[in-house]
Every structure is written in structure tokens, then in C-alpha cells.
Image (cartoon, rainbow, N blue to C red):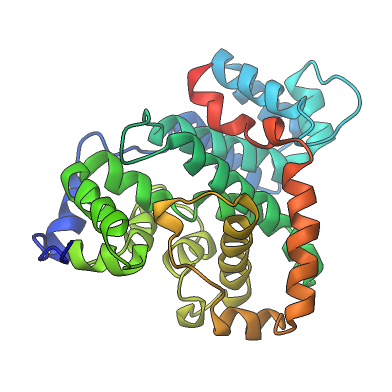
Length: 297
């Protein structure tokens, strides 16, 4: 199938992304929680009172806190206890994850497998957190969040630019073009850029927005190249480990800039990480994928 001529300009897409009424804003309570977590004067009791005002959010936080995803051996029955045990960083990543999945969830169709998408997003987050430790990066809860959010521009394309997204997937399936090449033949901007626009709308920290925007081109990151490189490599590791043929992963491979920044130029070391991270992700697939079902419970 031949490449499709671009039909939307960058300005048109950005305008639609900014003005679509249904474009998800981070829920108000989630924004309040993130602001409180970032305030060093906030106490666990204050945070617990705020979360407790939303029964659905409370139930979801407790469900995740009690899963093997966080590995706490004793049952966590109250929000206050969850905050004390998990810490503010973990709570922040849980809340942002819930907000993201709830806002961008869409049912499967012939062009988009929602389960595979969220499994990949969560797998990337899990691997990013471990890779950060392995390369000596100061680990925070936001490393996982950056991995989870990296491809959210794809959800925007699928949900709000559906005809163009379908055309792009058809190109990937019917040609030898990579996902990136097919995307460029239909859209004047990439899903990474569109995802960063949503990140800005959500008032996410600059380093998260940069990780989303440059996760395919880590050498272009201006301020947080190490974090961006971690997300990029975690993305590729997640693809290698899954073994699934997913259109939005077609053709992605380790970027030399990321390998240089993280000093991962040793092929044997990369293969060791593939095995290690495969064991990590597959240890309990059901619980690693737990977040992808949150919007429905």
C-alpha cells in the first residue's frame, strides 16, 4: 500500500488536541493529590483525608497497594496505612496511573488492541524503574510514570483522530514501513509530540513531558537526557520481551544516543538485561497488568 498524503497540518492537529472538549484533563482530585505530594509540608494524614473524599479512588488505590505489584506482605486496609507503607512517590505514581488509564481507556477494535497497549505501557514502566537502578539513576516514582505515559499520544490518535489512525495502521500492515515511517506519511507530527502536548495540558513536570516527547529520539532531549534514554531503552526492552507483533512497535530498536548516554554499548550486557527484565515482567503477568483494568472496576 502506498503512503498516504498528509491531510492535516501540525497546527491543525495541535489546535484539535487543545480544543477537543472531550480531551481528558487530569481529574481535579488527582491534580490536588499530586500538588500535595509535591509539597514537603504535606502530612500523610492530610493526604489520606483528601483521598478518602473519593470512594472510587480510595478503592482503586487500596486494590493496587495490596497487589504483588508493590509486594507488601501484610494487608493494607486503610488509606493512611497505604500512604505510610508505600510512601508519597508510590502514591503519586498510582494516582497518575489511575487518572491516565481511566481517561484514555478505549475498547478493542480491528486496529487497536487495548490490552496489548496497556500491557506494553506498564511493562515499560516496570522495566524503566529497574533499569534506572541498574544504571545508577536516582530512582523516583516518576520513572515508572514516565514509562507508563510514554506512548499516550497513540491513545490520543486512536481516540480522537480515528480515521487517520486506521489509515496509518493499514500502512504498517500492508507495507515494510516502520510505525514511525507510516506515522510520518499520515501525520505531520508524531504521537510523541502529541503526547507531550497532553502532558503539558495535565501540568506534568517538565522532565515527564520531555520523556514523552523524545522517547524515540533521546539525543534531542535538552534537560533530562538520562531519564529520556531510560524510557527509550525500557520501551525497546518491553518490545523484545513481549514477543507480540504490535503495529505501534514495528521497527523500533535501541537508539545509539541512548546506549551511549547510559553506557549500554555492551551487547552481552543488553542480553543479560533482556533475561533479567523478562523474569521481572513475567513473574506475575496478571498483577503487572492490573492497572490496565482499573477503568472498568
